Length: 192
Length: 247
Image 1 (cartoon, rainbow over the protein chains, first blue to last red):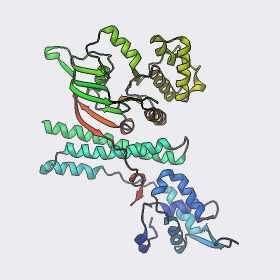
Image 2: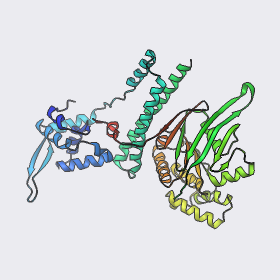
Image 3: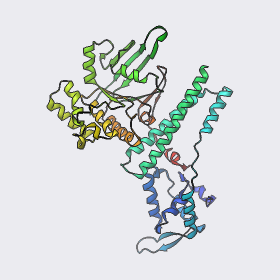
Image 4: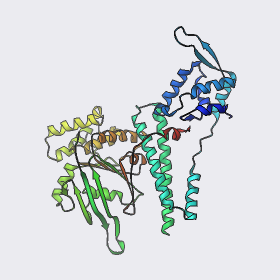
């Protein structure tokens, strides 16, 4: 899938970018046309506390970009006492792109190789004690886990954002279990 | 609100050995630990590292082979059997992985038990149980038998039971070990509330989710503490990144 890129947009953007924001916006428009603020509200609901770290302008910038690429079209809706709004609707090309996204099974890559090689290299060169490196990493991941866990605890039952946070929590937990295995391996190696 | 100052639990050189000669096993090799009032300490480590034995020592369920153990102003390691049993009943709450509820008794009756065993009147025990059922949000399950409750609910009943006599410290052994992800969240939510009220916990756990919500984390290996970290509970700044946002 080739993202519709616009280098200038990256210049002023601050905060976090949502990797799949183009696809999500197109998919949200699949059932009916919407205004930008409605799309943004639906994203915010799905992301819960994580929406705070999302770049505020990204939705509008992306909508403009998608329109330029012919994946959606917009029309100006006049309002009597407020500035005009823009309603966005999906084009046939946009609909095809949504279908492609839904069928795509690629998965963001976890990165154990990076850390594994750091440990191997540190041990081989005698640069640092791998067990200390594991401990430091574990500390950092536990802090992240604590933050994610607290955010999950603050979500009401059956909240979609709570489900997202559970995903973050369980993934960190898996990483921490692997670090436990790393600590075991390298401390056995040292005592030999 | 429970108000306490200073150290609730203090151990120096606490050790436990089993067997003799070639069959000698040093389950806990002389550890020092201080648990402050209102603090939650998590103890992690691989199976067989001695963490459950440590918890049993701290709770007076087993006698140490060496070392000192203080709870507040009381020295536990020298207490007689009788005094130790009384202290266990009134000052320490226990929570176990397998809940250990009495299957023939209702949720409310299970929670009343420790108060009755500590010599409180049936009326006072019942009133306390009602209070605790409300605190763990299970008033509507008061008359249910444990078998009619979900895993998360059973553990919440067990936690309520542990609080019956307003213990100085609650010792928990793998409190989420038998629970799925959703029930774990239920129990974590409850522990978080109790901590906000100043309850002190020592929790032995395999579950990183439980460990991450503690104030302090002690790692054990081969009967010894190998690492100790204080969790800052700081910013949620990297959450977006962890969820898949790009910086």
